[in-house]
Image 1: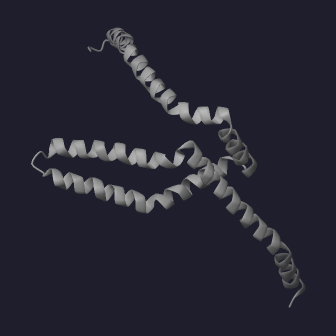
Image 2 (image 1 turned 45 degrees about the vertical axis):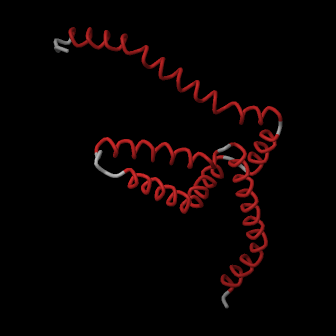
Image 3 (image 1 turned 180 degrees about the vertical axis):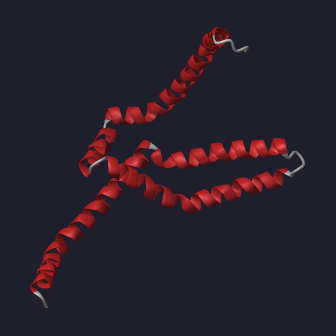
Length: 164
């Protein structure tokens, strides 16, 4: 064995315990990330999105295909749910990777600690309502811009010699 190969072997042998520790630490971090996502409701988001999408898709299909039996749409909904359930672990792994790329293990532990406390529990309980109210306020605000936008657009088009 050449000297370089021997040094490489020694380096690998010396690094193995730390690599094992890193893998163990990553496993602990992933477990904590999954706990955090469970606590905050992030894991149930996929199910909520699936319900919204399947309802919208089925309603659209019903309108465009009124002669299709209702049972066919029930079957479609059931199959969508099965597919989502079967692929859920893949989504969870993707979400864990995203959280892991933005937060250290210490960050995750701190967030878990926060969400286990009274303020964190209040945030978890209140945030869905805050988000719904915020979305409603945003929609109303956007609607209120319509007259202003229409007037500004008409004026600019007239100034540019473009008929609205």
